Each structure stands twice: as structure tokens, then as C-alpha cells.
Length: 603
Image: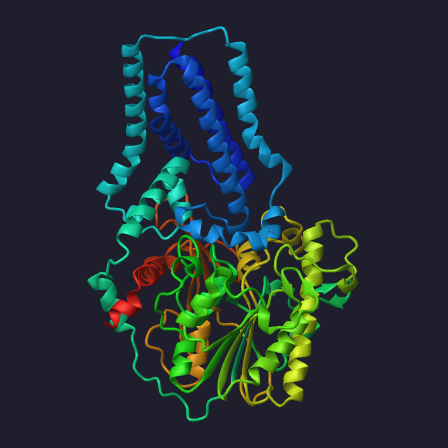
């Protein structure tokens, strides 16, 4: 009878994994089931050494802690499509200010993850008069056998991978791949180990091969053109490409940005490459031309590291540089990051008028127009980087500012999102008008781009149904495409650019337009004749006419190749040559960030 309570404990734990996978719409293959079972056996076999009276309450406590971690992973996954990790501890302190967005992700049914505790309490009640006691020797034998079974189940696939010399365990570019390969407890265990080892190895240098790759990609010409235009780079919060040219009951959702297409280069196949840092990732990628981290945000983990950034390069070439963000200076360590990447000034909430807030900060109309006033205090030529905030989740906007008729829509958050987007578009229109009136617009380089998706594109969402998503390509483009407008100095003719690219290419494009080269960047100019490899944190990518979707449930290198035009699956060899290049870039970017490689590479 020693296995009676234990079997119920294991069954309830496994059923929670099934429920978690159902809620997150993640896969539940056989290997994943076995790895989860192995993890449970390894972590709980020791409880079989303890007498029944104490053991049952230990199991109850373990089930509660298990549910607590699962529900935390669930809420985190809904927003970031990734699992919690040790590296996120520094990021958690920053979450309170955006808590409203996370509260919107919590659903009543999530708490069924704790239902097993009620079931187990019933089991304890009906077996309260039973002892299930066995001799100590037999308990030891049972515990040892259970641990051994768990070890064999867990070690077998890892040994198989090691024999095949698969690099994923040490060189994986995705937490979700680790999750599928190691199971829930295996993932959290290896993540904890990596967190400890990362702290101990903080002074580790880049490998010889990584240093060689840096040198091969380093360039020396940083003089640039004699005439240097003022540069305005504006990041729009949660702004998807699907908004552009969209109409709601005959009314344009973004009339000012639609008009902007007539005056600028508009990139119709441009993608956000953010990960767990979301807005901060977009800022980081855009200004440094490096990828976001596999886990956590650069802003919270490595705020004072050295990077070969765009503002630093521009400052070295005579530009006055300023960042503008109407929120607390220390939020997500922006004060430290902005200084380390080369901004002379940081205009934060204290530098803006105490006027109407929409959502978490000053409304974008006042933010963008006041930012023009701050720009005028800078010495020309200047580089002004602005981070708008009105359309930040959970998309709160006063009733008096809701100008769209959204009757017929069901999702309240989607309705709030469209209202905030319409408001932000008006703010952009006001800014452009003022720039033109003040004579700044014509001879400046002005860039608007979206930082990431709305978080409303998941399967089954009203936005997804409205967009008629019918294929993997449709889903990818709805989730990843963001707008990019580039207004060249002294040019007012528009052109739609169909070459694909990502946020990592913005800095190289600016540098290319100024006829400069940056010491090191991982992106490419969007204006050259070469096709861009647009990589994403999970190993997926867009290249030429193809989209590669990595299969994280399988070993690295497995996935599906799609033709973007036809949206059909095509031969794997159409994408195969780029798969390892993408993984290599992501690993190198991680090494540069985590080991402060650009600082050490220049010593």
C-alpha cells in the first residue's frame, strides 16, 4: 500500500501538466510526458523515506508549490510566450508599474490548477484512519528504486543527445526548446543551475571563435557625410502593422500614418524581434543592433555593459544625443542604460508637464509635442530618441477620448486597444504638423516604428478572427509585423519597400544613410541590395521569400519552411542553409551581452 498515496500524488501532478498545456496551447508529446514524470520522481522520491503521517502533508505542500509555480508560468507565458527563469528576478521588481496589463491575463479557470489540492484533501479525509506504514528498510528500497527509475527516464534522452553530439543543451537559443526537451522540472532545474553558474562566471571572456567573428564584422569608416541631418527616432507602443490602412465602419484607424506613407519609405515586411523585455527589447535592438536575451531583459540584467550603439557612434561624430520617455527615470534602469549607450540627456517624466495621463504616463499628444521643445534645446546636429506610451497594455483610455464606434466588437481589451491606437495616430499627426511648421521636418531624418505586437494576437482571439488568419504565415505576420516609416532628409515622395527586415536593421540603415560604418552591428542596411536575414529569438526567421518556423518540441534544426507568397509549405532545403546561421548569431549576441564582449574585445 506504500504506492497508493504516491500514485495519486503523481497522477494529480501529471494532470496539472496536461491542464497547463491546454491553457497555454503548448504541445504535450510523449517524451515531454516522460520527462515530466522523471522530474516528479527525482524531486519527490525522498518523501517515501518518511512515515505516512508526515509524508501525506509533505505531498500536499508540494502539490501547492507546484501549482503556484505552474500558474506563475501560465500568466507569464500568456504575455511573453516563454517560461519564467531565474534571470527574470531582477525584472520582477519592474513589473508593479505595468501590473494592469498582467491582471488582464488572469482568468478564473486558471485556479483549477489548484483543484488537485482539494482532491488530495478528500483522499486524506477518506484514508484518515489508515496508516499505510511499512518497515524502514522497505521504505528505503522503494525510495531508492523510485529515484533510480526517475534518473533513467531523465538521463536516457540526454545521453542519446550527447552521443549524437547535439549542441542544444549548452547552446540552445530558446527557453521553450529547453522546456520541451527537459520537461517542466528539468527546465526549471537547468535554469537555476545556469543562473548560479552565470553569476560565478561573470568575468568569463568570449571564446576565440567569437572574438574572431567580431573582428571579421568590425569596420573602420566612421567619418560619414559632411552634412549631418538631425535624426528623430520615434518608437510607438504596441503598434502592429495590421493597423495601417485598416478601417472600422468606414473610418480609418490610422489616417495620419496612412498619409505618411505618401511622404516616406514604408516597409511593408518589417518585423519586431523583441522577446521577454518587450518595449525595452525594442529600444535595445534598435539602438545597438544586437538581439534580445534568451531570458530576461538586457535593461534589467546588464544595464551598464558596453555596446557599440547608434547614439554612441553619433555622439562621436558631433551629434548631441537625447532620449525621451515620459516616465520614471529609473524604470527598467533606463537612466543607466541610456547613459551607457551614449545619450547625453534623458528627458523623463519630471521634464514633462503634469497634464492628462492616459494609461501609465502622460498622453502621447503632450509627450510628442513637448519632446519637440526639448529637441530645440539640443545643439545641432542632434539625435532624439522618443518612446511613446499611450497605447501600452492594458490600453486604458478615458471615455471622452474614445472616438471610434466599436459596436459589434466583443473583446473589451481589443476595443480599448483600437481607441488608444486612434489617439496615438492623432498625436503623430500633431507632431508632424508642428515639425513642419517649425521647419524641422523637411531636412531631418525622421523614423517611426512599432515596438511589438499588441498581445491580442493569440489563437482564438477576436483580432485573429478579424484578420482571417488561416495559415502559419498569416499568424506569423499578424504577430510579428510592425510598421516602419523612414522620411529621408529633403525628400517628400513615398515608396513602399517590400524587402523584409527587422528592428536590428534600423541602426545599420541610419548609419548607411549617413555614409558611416559602425564598429560592430549584427543587422544590415534596409537600403542595400542584399537580402536581409530577419531572425527571431526562438530560432525562426524570415529570409528572401521564405519563413522558417522552428519546431521547439524537436531537436534544434527541425521546423517547417513556408513560401510567404503562397503561404504553403515548401521543401525544407529552401530554409536549411540559414538555420545554423541564425542560431550562431543568437549565441554570439548572447555572449557579447552576458560577457560584456564589446568592452573586452577592445581591451
